[in-house]
Amino acid sequence: MKTGGISFWWLTFSNEARFALTMLRRYLFDTLVGLLAVYLLFMVVFLGLRTFLAGDMAADQLDMVVVGYIMWMFAVLAYSATAESIIDEARQGTLEQLVMAPAGLGRLLIVRMLVSLIATIAFNTSLLFLAMFSTGRWLEIPYLHSLGIILLGLPAVHGLGFAIAGIALVHKRVGAVSSIMQFVLLAFVSLPAWPMNALSLLPFTAAANSVNQLVTQQTEFPLWWYGFILLNGLFYLMAGLLVFRYFEARAKSLNVLGHY
Image 1 (cartoon, rainbow, N blue to C red):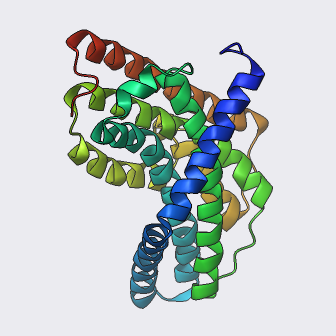
Image 2: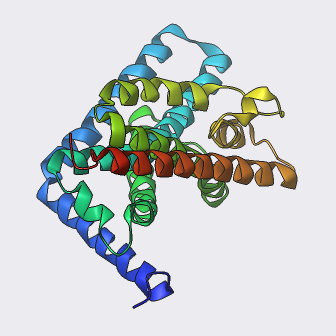
């Protein structure tokens, strides 16, 4: 079977999907606790803001909090799925096996990115309905439109994950960087990106802000804006892959690929 053929890609994808489902079943309790922690954090933020805000402005800002939090979770999960995947493999001592696999490490991470994307959509959709049910704020969300924008912009966050994963191959412990990245991603999804400005160039900022405005203000965007979001996502994805390739080659030359 050719490693570049469609059947090979599908086999790799199906294997990774089965692996992800197996890990989900095996560590179901941990997954549920994680979902609960994310939900409780959201409720603390939401109820805290509702206590200090009042009137129509409060209603608009609370809606923005709901959407903004979901956008942040999309970004955090997408980043973690890429960066922490490499770190976990290094800890378990299986990283060198992945490098020697027919798919190759870079290609395998791309497939994992697609699998994690499906899981992220399912996770955040559940979190969204749970949040709306708990807060009583049922947003009128154009789901397909919003999901399309997210899919256009989310590769940028995966690009950041690839870059950090590459750095982890050489420098190993990047836990502090990953912790800081959660706050960086929070800033990215909170900044105003429409109308077009310098902040729009940041990874995922245009996509996150567009979804927020679409849901809370029913903003209509020109067609070129969607193209810009796509190019932004692809640019950071390609840049992240280049950084990953560089550090992968450096780790091999230093013979530290399997060390942790």
